[in-house]
Amino acid sequence: MITRRTILKTVLKGTTALTTVAIFIGLPSWSRASSRMTNRLRIPEQLKGTLKDGVRHYDLTMQKGSMPFLTGLTTPTLGINGDFLGPLLRLRDGENVALNVTNQIGESSSLHWHGMHVPAHADGGPHQLIENEKTWQAAFKVKQKAATFWYHAHLMHKTGPQVYRGLAGMMIVEDEESRRLDLPSTYGVDDIPLILQDRAFNRDGSFRYITHMHDIMAGMRGETILVNGTASPFMPVTTRKVRFRVLNGSNARFYQIGFSDRRRFHQIATDGSFLRQPLETDRVTIAPGERVEIVADFNVAKPVKLVHIPIVPQTGGMRGGMGRGMGRGMGMMESFDSQPLDLLEVRPEKSLKAASPLPAKLTDVPNFREQDAVKTRRFVLDMRMGPGMMRGGGSGERFTINGRAMDMNRIDETVKLGDTEIWEIKNDSPMAHPFHIHDIQFRILDRNGKQPGPEEQGLKDTVRVHGGETVRIITRFEDYADPKLPYMYHCHILEHEDAGMMGQFVVTA
Ligand code: C2O
Ligand code: CU
Ligand code: CU
Image (cartoon, rainbow, N blue to C red; front, top):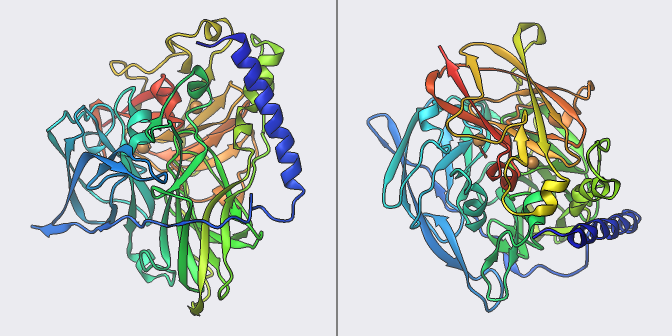
């Protein structure tokens, strides 16, 4: 139950967090402590599929498992072909694939290929329900630029808890270009997947999930960071250059990643493609659902940590209808990401394999011209607070897009196949929401009328929309039409999605 006291506590917690930011920003190092990390980073097994009659088959089984995340304790989990998370799926552009998904978790689920351009029937959203003990097959042709994608459960009202328990994994798509580019690409050696997730635990070691309203409002967050399902991870490194494919697979937490000694590195990719050229930087922000690829240089025998650099909250304007204190408290929800966190300790060996310099150019990022857009659709994201929230109870119509909560029986938008469209996403709430669209990859046109930074100029399928901000994206809906089966668009804070901040569109011929 939510009471005025809970809210007050929230506001106070926010204030403390803010003070912490101020203190930590003054420090020369971004690391929380000089503590060593104790567990070797798990590297998900790679699944390359088997070729049969020109179709590459992948067999996936969703199952129950358990993990020793915390010393001396066992956590009941869900996994795919294993105890927690799933294998890395390697796909090639142009190939026909068949992904066979068997559900053995004891309840219904679904499995969605996040970021992939696939027909609606193969999308794995809430309409492609897989009942317990049933197998579902997603068959499609890979039509994708090389990048890092992921898959995760996407059951209506249950995406949050099922992903939290472990139903997610990474996918890598290769294309001709990526195979030609001289980039670190030896999986598990100098091409490393990093699935970032935070978890809360009960005393008995089980995952703690949604224990009060705040876990829904801010999204479910935990104090323990898992990377590929490893708590307190370290990774030995044998090469001078290492590429990290970073996936924010957390339910709600945002990360701003960098290195503890503030070294510079290169960002080379966004969600759905390489950047045009490597971008030198010292940090990159990644919201739930987003991916980035970075390449960093390491020195012989000099350990360094990949860390979360505190994010200073960006709050939009305060809105009417909210009490002053409320507005402040909610705005500070972004500040729950304002404490420093150690993500991974990198331990370079005594001798490191040399690497070639990064290519000057990576790819031509597909462009959509504004003058080709036949339509602008408007989406307003909102989370209603005030009296309704004080009463607690069900989430009702609290999390909405254009004033409505998700309804699987309602098609919200109808798009014509082949059309270029602009989607304008306005965030009327005080906290940031990562907005994700199925089926397509898009470009960001502008944020509050301003061009996005170079770090966002690759293809995207998820975009952060800060409190009070309006973001315009542009895309083209190609190849697949289905008058009945919809694709989803939603906030990728999974508790918001589950509570209704989601809508459906069909693409018609
Ligand atoms: Cu990553 Cu609709 O989801
Ligand atoms: Cu998706
Ligand atoms: Cu949200």
